[in-house]
Image (cartoon, rainbow, N blue to C red; front, side, top):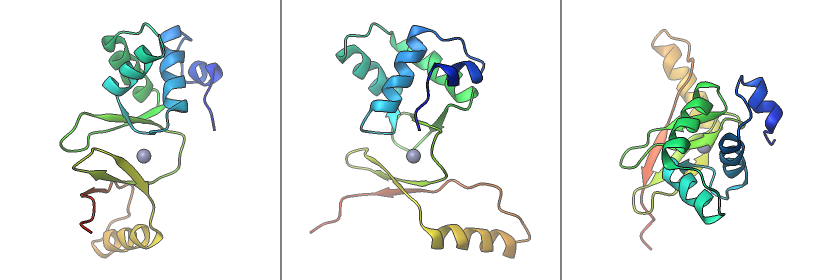
Length: 136
Ligand SMILES: [Zn+2]
């Protein structure tokens, strides 16, 4: 799924060049999870003149509009991803900062059961595994 100018309008945001460029960057990047600095650098490399402060501001607006999700993983700066995917959990490599996505039906099922065993309905969860490359 790709977001376009219409989605910006639907989210109540005026279509401005920085917003369009940042949205395109998030859509086309190989790495789905990018920090504001990553986005800023990528835009600079492709010759776009968007300041870091603008990137921060637009990402916050996108987050408030529900277009992106912010993750505050430990040991790094906040990363952003488009909120166009279904639920998934994350794995963060402590050596490289690489962010991986995974979804395990067994973990999903168990979390629901555990909440229920404590007398609750599971509303949402966020699971992050901090990992290191496996020693050979
Ligand atoms: Zn993700």
